Length: 477
Image 1 (cartoon, rainbow, N blue to C red):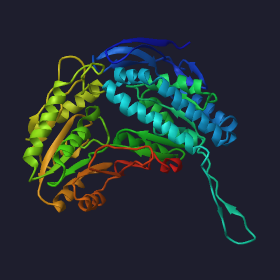
Image 2: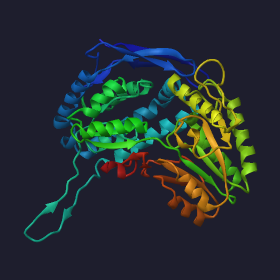
Image 3: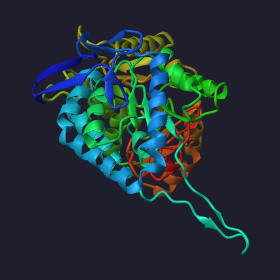
Image 4: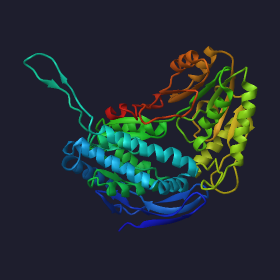
């Protein structure tokens, strides 16, 4: 039988006990993988093992899909009215809100997110998303179409069947009657495993939600190639997104939604409210230690305010460096990168910037001796062809670039293979909107940064993804 892991939190931010099943969650039960294997889960603040969880394989994916397919045909899908699906989703939101402190603590422990930020951001947003789609569940409607008096024509919105997704994607998937096979990140599986208990407590029928831990090269690939999975929604790198599309084309042509990488521009004009622009620019690149697909990592500042902006922006970066440490600590504002692999990747980009001749204006080094902490880093004197300007770093590393004209900055901002988001700062709203419309990005935020909302669609252009999430748009995708 699969085991459990119990962690006693005794921190300044949270005190309590959390018990998590470490097996696979299939058909409403915790089971061992067909081929026994485990994955170590690491605390990024210390680099030490927290626990080990079961690692599934393609055989476990087959079992989970069969169970999910049976549930879809017998106890979910169109067998269950939208009002019932909505009540269960709302109950799930209530349970998550009840246990918000525990889930926040697990995010801080396993992901390294600063406790206060994870609670106010990630957890609160997840609760809001579940409530939002609970309200949509009984409002998914087709229409009758008038043709002639001898014909009745109508449309009906039907679920895909078995799909793979969670969080933003989880709500609309269940609201529309799909069943789910989820592969959480092998690096950060703890909250997903604890979440399975809430699914059971909320009263979802067995098999509606299934969780198979494992590596992308095994479980992820098996899901991508599976002939009975009708839809995949993936968040991650563009490289893996290409592999999923390829697997879809070579299997059953399953529908794919991709939320991929970004290299989002932040454009700050001379007439911006400078204090607000500085605050939001810092939030845009340094929140969650830069581990955000919409991070504003290319910061373009008009020449009239460049020097003042850089001085004050640097002061914020240094204040974050001084407040770097334990995610549970009082006063902590900057935590670790999520893993050793990500730490090494970010540090390699910093080294690349130095080698290419860019100036490390502040930061550019490891923080401390334990864990995966990196100083908030600002590069100046960069060139468009540098890797730190062109490639997604996914860390607390930004480049600041001076510009003269609107036309110049639009061309520079669009000079990227990505197109997920952009941020524009100007008190001239006509100009701000004109520039927002000229930038090749799925989301444009004016005088703010990374300000998503459950009711507003989200998704990318170019190599930043396919499809839209959130809002009513997510019901169709």
